[in-house]
Image (cartoon, rainbow, N blue to C red; front, side, top):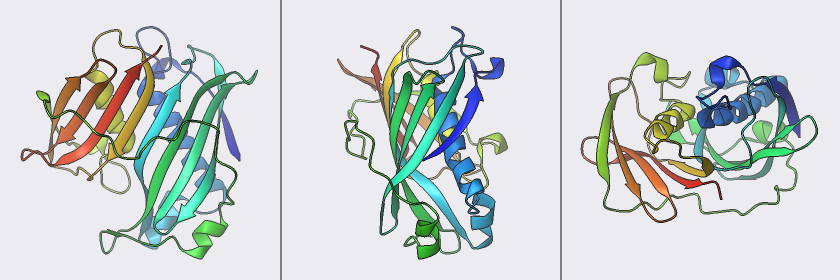
Length: 236
């Protein structure tokens, strides 16, 4: 298990003084990348050999979002490698070990020269010893959305949405999805599926739908081909 400690800063809180939903995801992603840095397999080092880990899906359960100034820890560990895929858990908790959020995530190994997934090499697997999976409900990686979606916004991909892979970073999709939630919608659970990487110059068409139990935000191109699908559930 890898751990890093953090504190809620003013630049990451919402109007209620709580760590933003997308900032929780950012904190988990940061923990994963710090883990890679500290075992000598940083994202920038992987780029030198034309490889990258790209996220395929998130499933996050929010118990309580920490407030301004509150200290918290994020833990992460991989629990499985299979062919091109790696599976990784996250746990966010207070210094007193109160669970704030926990997550399952699926990643795939990517060859940037071919633009295709690649089998995870032995050196990469050996850098991350697996541990038992976190005790949680494991839902399907794919998000099934209603067909009656409503277009609510168009967003042009600009430079500040991109990461070192020259794709829209996964946290940016979630930040934009949270922006189209109804006012005062308190997220209790999030499932996100990443279908296709949006790049500089693309226009993302953001569609929404609501059912009795969930709210959906789906990003597509002009032809309706998905980039990103997300499903939100309110706190119970």
